[in-house]
Amino acid sequence: MSYTLLITVLAVLCYFGAAGLLWRRLSRGTGKQLPSKLPPIILGFIGAGLHAGILYGNIFTLAGINFGFFHALSLIFWLIVLLLLVTAVSKPVENLGIAILPLAGGAILLEYFIPSVHFLQADERHLEIHIFLSVIAFSMLNIAAVQAILLAIQDQHLHAKRPGGFIRLLPPLQTMETLLFQMIGLGFILQTLSLLTGFLYLDDLFAQHLAHKTVLSIVAWLVFAILLWGRWRFGWRGKTAIRWTLWGFISLALAYLGSKLVLEILLGN
Image (cartoon, rainbow, N blue to C red; front, top):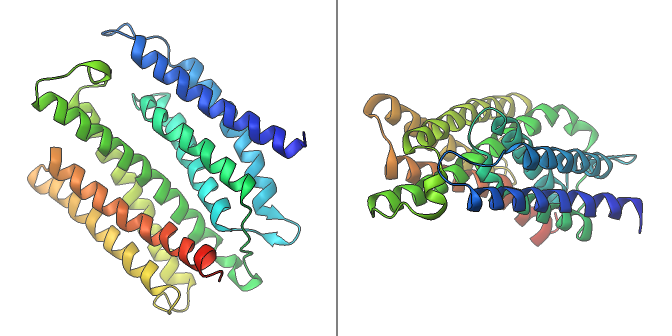
């Protein structure tokens, strides 16, 4: 077994193992007597460290910076995992890892088995700040989208007066909503910086190969701006907040990953 394959297998096993421990913790815990969340978080951090080594070797090559589609997808999931684990140390968001960690493991496998190549040209290096901010913003808002889905499930169960299973073990609905808007607020700030650096460093954001990405990114920014204003002005919450969060994330996903998938994988550009 090659060194790269060994690290890949270990990283994937750590992610799936951490998700399994979180699921076991959630299914066995009752009331306030939940098992410690420390073991799955530690295992998740080990997986994230191995994942970082894989990314470094695949993206920073002797030929230049390779930002191919599957490398970018893997980087996004690594950042999502890292943000989730760091946040989970002090806030009750660790259960999101049950969904996110296996997806991150899948992204590592795709990166290994389907190599993708898209080297940044010398005149594109100044875009690294813009790309970095875009990826972090998308990662944070991705976590917010998962949180919104979990909040929707929790809200549905509570309104149906069926708060059984793992729903009973989640934080109170108000706490979940507060965490959601904290994530959206931080993601919105990062996305704003991403758009500003894009306008600053790119000669024409509305060029043919960038127009759809720019428009969708602005649409997503407007959606999140309206959502945050509605929360501040009218106290939006519940289904309204969930719908706006998911629509904003879908627009952002189409902008970042949809355009990259079409250009690099489908069109081979």
